[in-house]
Length: 486
Image (tube, rainbow, N blue to C red; front, side):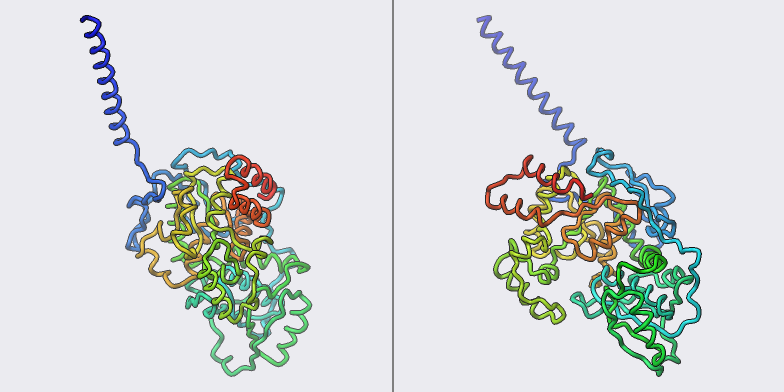
């Protein structure tokens, strides 16, 4: 009888102990832990929303260690124009880890100062009008080329016209995207820049000229400069890739750099929202900016259809055929991909980042337009990296409304967030990828990781066929491929 009572007491003690532990755990979880389902990105709290009135100052989040530098415009004139110091991370991150550590400078630094024999070019011989072409970064590069060309042929540069006829049908003018007054003033000692062609030039002799691609000094000093004998106004029909990259005088190359990294500052409205997006992104800690070039126009242009349905592939082919200035119509998608000419898919990017060692709580900013296939195509990336943000998630509809339907202005916001990221990863080596990587080097060799798509494709194909699994083996192979690339 006594033995039976003892057993009952022991059982009761165990039940009470378990109950107390369970209650304690529930209390701790309800007070200290906020759980986010893996398929859902945590919402930003209200303090990270921009004030609806422009006169209010944006909220400063409690995790940021803001210096006086951060209170200024994101683009500055110092050389190198160091933007801002990293904020205090909101979750533990090993800043000394190779995952975040910038690469060594290897004794390279910005070199934009004029040489001792550099002088203002003197009296202008005529006016240079420029019609830019392409997306934001293609236009940026073209404008910098035209600044240099204006210097070479001793022309007054009229503020360039932005492309309104491209795939995006963007109606933005120069001052919508760039700070017009700053552009003029920053180049005052290099090239005379004016906002409009003088009225008295309306009836002056003009010529529209398609400047030859990748041309050097001799071409412009000879063939183009000789046009001043007959004409007072020269219009460049296109701006992209008009000037050679090599064998130019150092002062002309430096002028291109000054135009790109000092003179071409974004408009104050874009800079303001861009800086707020950066602050909101940093509230999650150090972040990756992923230029996910998986939009409809990119896939149609490149002819890349891997992983798409036959209906989607047909839609892209139709777009390519109907776009007159895309010269190549017949493209073998499999061959394109095997040569590394296709952007990585969202799933492939996810496998790539995991293989490099970036944990699932790494915040990622998607610098891109609308992803082809929408949420279903992003599911694999989102399931692996739930803190997946974009300008549309970081800002309200009202905040983005002024930029809506203006692809170049929306791209400018992505550009700013990408420049300021701790790591930049482009899924394709297009104009944006090259422009951002160059700008980040100029700002102090910020870390950029460019996937070697040609070597990655065979690995991803093996995974699809079940001959290779995600994990340590894949990680070792990918790290080996990229260990010297960043």
